[in-house]
Image (tube, rainbow, N blue to C red; front, top):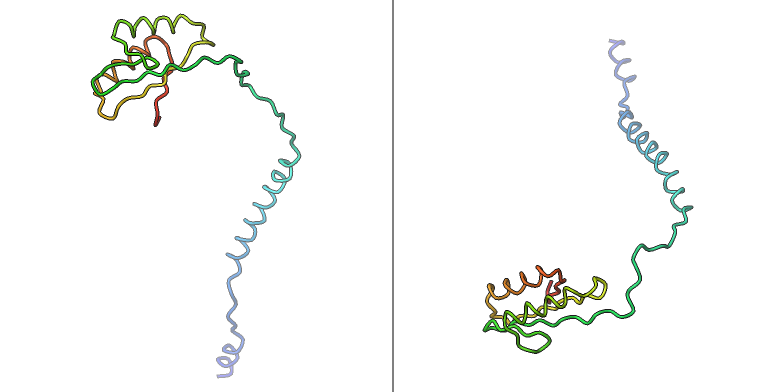
Length: 135
């Protein structure tokens, strides 16, 4: 009987510290590995250089190309047929690359998609850049 009572008083519940120690060791390892990187990045002096060429002093004026609902094409406000559009695009293509204008394309809300595709194909075949509102 004495053995049973003595055993009951000597047993104590102790928390399991192994998971706590594992988590603390992992956190310590993370701090040790990241602290030198955090301190070293503050010491770097970056060069302030750019690889962009300077903007040309005389930038070309954009070509305002508009297509109305009937499919008519307007070059800077002047109406053109298909042959005249091709002639104007050839003239723009023959300019040097740095002076070649870009095309600002505007269409009416109810312009036929085929008309717009025809004009875009003609412009892209002549190597001109296209800018359209909303894109």
